[in-house]
Image (cartoon, rainbow, N blue to C red; front, side, top):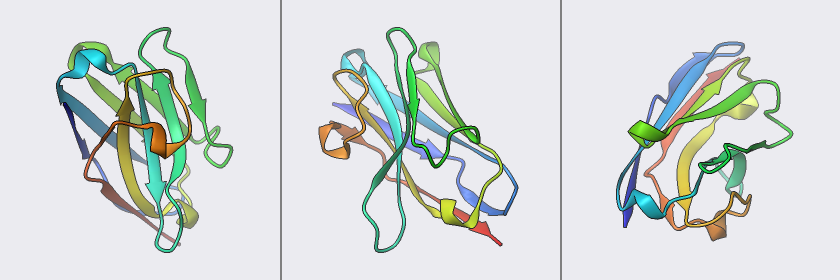
Length: 123
């Protein structure tokens, strides 16, 4: 089992920035892709960004392209999500997820989840 722990959420004004971190521990050797999802009240959990540890390929939701950047530090088993130009519609609980396979966008395909961190963007 791998464990994931997010940090870095908070309250920010529209146009501001936040950086989320997700540290993986435990049986991380089997993890080959990590991603960020978000869920706003009354909405389904949606893919935000993800990366493959092998090859370093990344993917982003259209709604965050050009504003968010995902990166990873393999030595620290940590993934980051740099969020710039934040908008009120980015308000959600952000979850880190990992899976034993290539990067995909469907949340049901992920084996491990963090507890989530709240991001609130005020207008």
